[in-house]
Length: 417
Image 1 (cartoon, rainbow, N blue to C red):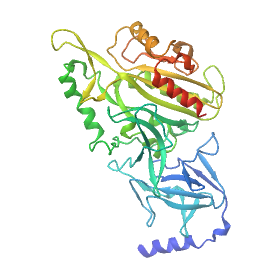
Image 2 (cartoon, rainbow, N blue to C red):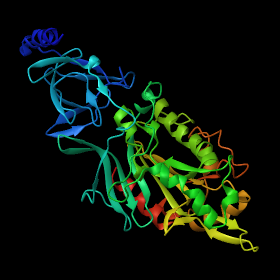
Image 3 (cartoon, rainbow, N blue to C red):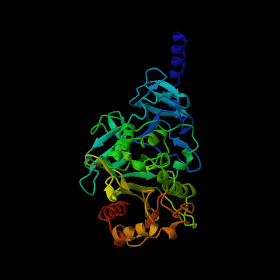
Image 4 (tube, rainbow, N blue to C red):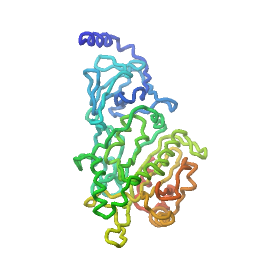
C-alpha cells in the first residue's frame, strides 16, 4: 500500500507546472473537512471572499499563491504543514506545493472537539485603539508565525469581559448558513488571564447568585449563558466562524433574550446583507462594520434580608458583571446607512416605560426603534414584555448619543470609513 501511494504521488507530480491554468475553487465544497485557505498579497495573508455574490467560488489566476493550513488538526495527506502550506493555482481545483499536485476538493483537515477551535490572540496591537483603559485583543489564527485576524476586541481585564468586539460583515455570510459544519462545542479560553474552560465559569453563576440572595431568579426557564458578541453566523469561512468561540467574544446573557429579540436583530442584519437592500427597498452595497458590546451592570431585587434591596450582578471579586445592556452598531460605509441597536438584558425587568426613561436619560436622547422595524426586518421583535429583552435603537447622530463610550465608538466607526 505504501508503494502504491508513493507511485500515485510521483505520477501526479510530473505534470509540468508551465501548463497552469486559472482555478475555480468552491470555498464551502467540504466545510467539515476543507482546510483553512488564505490568499497572499505582498506577504499579507487574508481570508478571501468569493468572486461573485451569486455563489461560493473563488476564481484564481494561474500560479496565484495561496496558503492552506489545518490549525488544531491533522491533514490526512502526508507531508503537509498544518501551520501553513504554500501552494499555487494549477487549474480547476488543482494546487501545486513542493512539486506535488493536490486537488483542493479532497484535501482533508481532520479536527476534533478537543482541538477546535485552535485560535491565537495578540495583545496591545498598536494598530488597535480602545476608547477607555481596555486591552486591545486581536483574535484569529497563527499561520506561518503570523496572526491572521478575524475579530478585534477591546477587553476589560478588570471585569474579565469585553467592552466590545468589531468585525466585518459581508454579503457572503448568508451563503454559509446551509453548510453541514456544526459549531464548536466550547469556547477557547483567554489563556493570558485564566486557565480554565469558559463553561466552568458560567456554571459557577448559581453559586454566586446564592451568595447574593438571588437564587430564585435562576430557573429552568430563565438562566444565563455565554452569549456571542460577534455572532457565529456573521462569517463566511468555517474557520472564521469558529473564531466566534473565543472567550473574549462572550458575555453573560439571559437565555430568553439571546433566543428572543436579540436573535431577531442578528437575523435581521443578516437579511439586509443577504438581500442587498433594506426592508424599504433602499439598496445597500459594500461591507458592513459591526461593533457589538456590553454596557452597565444589571441589577435584581434581593429579599434575603427581609427588605427588598437592589443588588448589582457582579459575581466574583468585581469580575463577571452581568451586562445591563447589549448594543450593536451596524454601518454600511459605502452608502452611509447604519444605526445603533440596544437590548435590555433582564427578563425580570418592570414595565417598558421604566426602561424607556433610563434609555432616553442616559443612553440616547430619542428611541427610533419603531421607525427602523421594517427597514431592518425586525417585525418579529416583541416589546410587549421583558422576557425576550426590550429593544431600542438610536440613529448615528452623535448629538443624540448620550453615553460617552457609545458616542466614542460610533465616532471612530464613522471616521474609519
